[in-house]
Length: 353
Image (cartoon, rainbow, N blue to C red; front, side, top):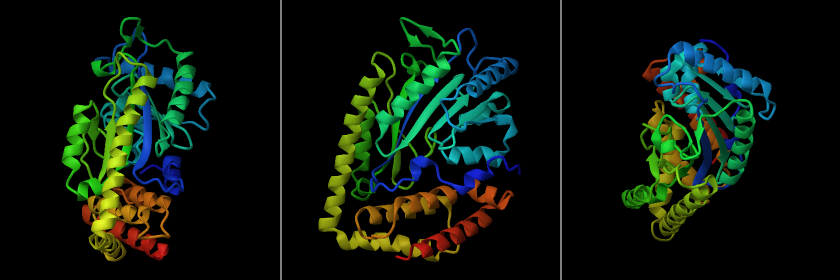
């Protein structure tokens, strides 16, 4: 197992390492899909052509100074665990590594910015910020896109906008998304109704790891679907309005829990704490589910000395690839579950609730 990414085990991404008490909106992400004029899409181009694209984009990224301390990794240089580390940290998608022989990834030291090369499109630029800082993320995205676009000729038509591999991304090539932690809506049983409303309004719902992932830990990813016919600013404003509505509904349900079911709420939170503090085997799914209850307890003041970076640290470093990378070898499911429980027990005991 190579050590290219070992330094990532020493820190959290900056978008998860903040002391804000905002718990409902964990993060905001914006991204542009771009393709190089005159070059076939990754899905139909030859490996030789895609390698030329990869080298060309890597050269451009090395020549610009707008991204601080950029790291660039050809995907074929990363082993399976290294690839999964980057997925677990939301720097790359699963699809990127399906075309591993000709793909690449670049990201900055803060891990707010990442650029996938030859995923579904030649370039996917994304910015992730904490909480609901979607405008800040968008401003940064525009700066980076302008810089790269000054050195590459993007595929663009006046009648269609930016030409993308998937027709749903035509136009601006823009998508915005948020990670929402909405446990009260799950506990109340109203989540199905909420999800139906969001989907009918044009919002795409995904799990914690994005496309193709399941919903765990009461965390959902909400993403825009429209890219053609509206400006990025209009898309953001419409998206914000829809997200604020679900945030208000979650706040209302949390208030109901405190006022009418406090004993049950407190029991749920302390049971989660008890398991995390004492378990001798813990799956990744169980960990995220239990940490969701701990997050809820911290946000509602049941636990007053927990800060969210600690909970984020548990959630990130307890994931399968992070555990295996730290140990320097492939682990069995049983070994992972044991080591995860050991790691969680130690950290939860340090909190001293």
